[in-house]
Length: 267
Image (cartoon, rainbow, N blue to C red; front, side, top):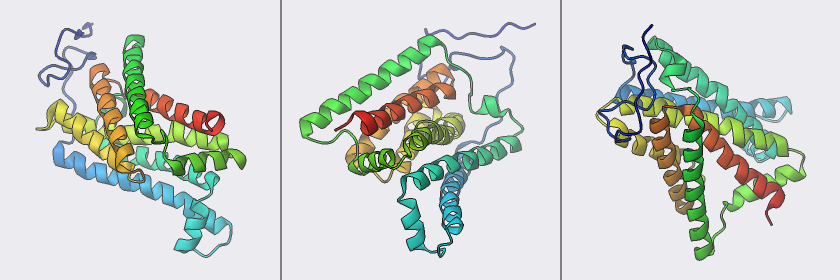
C-alpha cells in the first residue's frame, strides 16, 4: 500500500508550487475542478440558492399565517427574530445542494473538493490564536474610536430574540447554519476553483474574502473591513491546514462568542 505523502511546515505556506500540508496519496490524481470563470458562475448560483432558501422560508411563514404575499408582509415577518433565524437556517440546505450538483458534474468527491477534512489540534490552536488576535485588535480600534464592537441592529435583533424566546434558535442560526453556508461558498467552493486558476493561492484568498465580505452588505464600511481581515485569516488557514472544517469551526466560535456576549453579557 502506498504511504501517504506528507508535506511539512518547512515550505512557504503561500507558495502555489507546493501542495497544502496533507495529501492523501503520493500518486493521487489532481482534482478536476472548475477554474476561474466556472467557479465564478457556480459561485453566483450558490449565492442565489442561499438567498432563495432564505427568502423561501419567509414566504412560507407569510403563507402559513394567511397574510397577503407582498413585500410589506414579507418585511413584517422577516423582522421577527424567529423568522430571521429560520431564514438563515434554510439557506444552508439550498447552498449545499447547489455545491453538490456543481461537484457532481465534475465527478469528484464532495468531501475532497471542499476539503472537509478534520484539522490537527496544532492547526486548530494556531487558527484560534490568529482569530483571537485579529478580533482583539479590532476591539482596541473600536474602543479608541468610540465605536460599538457589534453593529447596533445586530444587538437589537439578538436582545429582541432573547426576550421573545428565540435565543437558542438564533444561536443555532448564526453559530451553525450561517458559518457552514458561508464557508462552503467562500473557503470551500470558491477557494478550491480559484486557487487552481491563474489567481493561485494568494489571489484566491483575497478574492474569496472579498466575496465573503460582500455577503455582509448590511454592515457599514468599518465592520466590512473587519470582516475582510478575518476572511484573509480564514483563507490562509484553509490553505495551510487543507481543512474547511477548521474555518467552519473558527467561524462558528467567532459568531457564537459574539451572540452569547451580546444576548446575555452585554450592556
